[in-house]
Figure 1 (cartoon, rainbow, N blue to C red):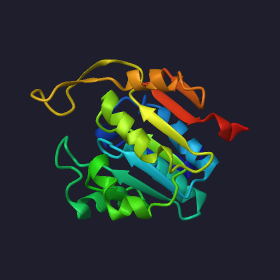
Figure 2 (cartoon, rainbow, N blue to C red; figure 1 turned 180 degrees about the vertical axis):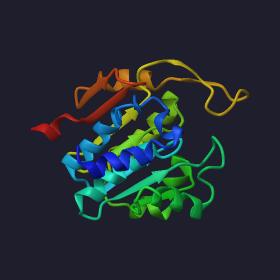
Figure 3 (cartoon, rainbow, N blue to C red; figure 1 turned 120 degrees about the horizontal axis):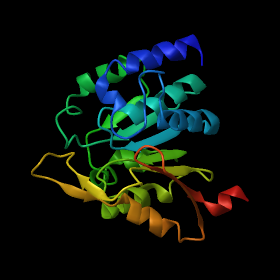
Figure 4 (cartoon, rainbow, N blue to C red; figure 1 turned 90 degrees about the vertical axis):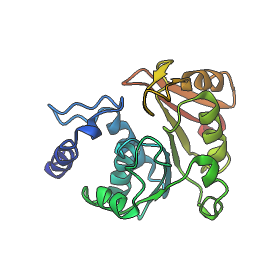
Length: 218
């Protein structure tokens, strides 16, 4: 790992919120946890367009944005989050400053749900994404919508990643009066039964599943 990357990670980890949310990060040895996978995948695949649905404080958009920046090919992350947890993503200037603090200016935020985004001009103008990362509202119904919104728009070798696939358990993310059960695992179990798909579900952190079309490997 280069000194520059070490410095970047050390700055990132000065914010305790960027070491949370089940990506298996560890501060002591500057370990990005699953972030290495996100970064490495984008560096290897070199997509021009990445879509991220949901993020508490931007860890995943920044991992992918950093990879695209290091690729040096002008790739962009399209980040969809309606800021339902709190007001963190509501001020566009503050959002841009948050990412700029880590040297990233290739992340475009949309203050929308996926349902709103698919009705927008930005959705219809979006070029084919090579990576879609689903990490918004963690119910089976919502991740199905998120997946199907981009499934047929992916590049031929594109991949969809799902976070929080390991456990079915209550989420208090939206406060004590809006507790719900995370059921992403149920959706991944159903995708695994589809012979047209390749599904790799990793029991790391809170779980990560990678899904791609089986024929893309032919």
